[in-house]
Length: 245
Image (cartoon, rainbow, N blue to C red; front, side, top):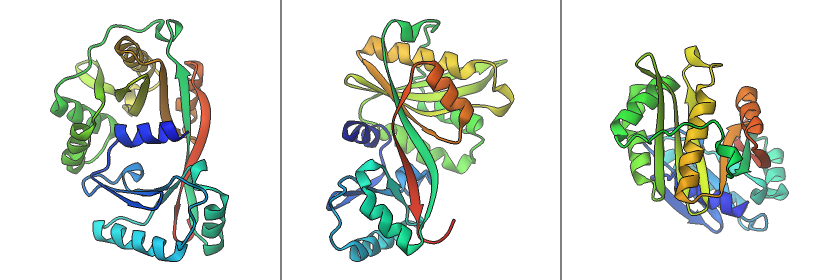
């Protein structure tokens, strides 16, 4: 679990990282993603001075114009969760962390697909597929440029337009898959499956032996696809914010 958490921080880097004890405070002015703008507690026993530390974190988030958000993995512990429950904090957006072995069978049916080397082209495709505002272009470009391990940028096109995009980050014997999306009008046609298989094949040839990813628990089609490809759940996380949902 700790290894995947650390790999996730490397693969999807925040612009600003601060530490308060074993809390990792990640903030990114150019992108609103919760993973990039959250407090990540990594030791269930680190509970000293909760009120003061939460206040310090809140001031950092306020300076960035972001809502104070805690990302709660099993490493956060039950006592911190109980504190938030008692204070009336909302709980939302539960996600699964899943992984799978990368063997020959995992790449069956994959086509040879070379990752996109042009970051600008990938960002344009990703924004179109996600339906994101163009204002996120600088922030997404900055995040991709800050990824330290080797990142494969994958774009699948149909009828001359992008339909699926994803990022596969090769980090030693691990391959992390991020930002998987298919354009709404192109869903249900196998584009995500083919693109993911191609990315996993690329990562395996680079030396990765296990693939992992994060997916919202409510995204049943995506969870079903990943299970069908051999991914199994390792642990879950969710987010907490002050006030009722």
